[in-house]
Length: 115
Length: 109
Image (tube, helix red, strand yellow):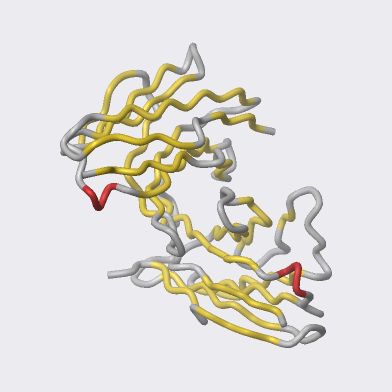
């Protein structure tokens, strides 16, 4: 079964609204989680690195005020897409690094459609 | 940053062998991953190489040459279910993964 759970799997929201995606590590603690975005037929693009108890580190070109990341516990990180627009429609995937180890697990992904 | 190159598409017949090459140019290197991704799903882990050489795991093998900035994923005894995108990813020193664009493998009967 999945060791990293993402919720929701699918979400449709109206343009201008905000939507929150959760990423939970199951059965392990993750001090570091990563958020990726993937457009159709393209590869995964890293958006930000989420560290428990501290501010996320965003990749160049990613608006931190638009994509709010919170990593409040060792098992949960959230990504909030604020004021969503149709161009934000994408597949968002998180991954989590096992605390103290090298293994990285991916979540199942979340499809966001902004209408 | 990372520059990771892999072929866009490959086609092979059921039962055959396919080799997917990946070359990379990086400022830092802490291992190379291969992932399989079916359309609309998240990537699943296939292999991880940090030292030079060949890692074999069932029908899948992965090779790494750090001096050449080169890796390949070898898929043997291809099955229809192996039709998917295969992603090469380089891990930087802070555990961030940089992905190649992916290679779409189509297995034909």
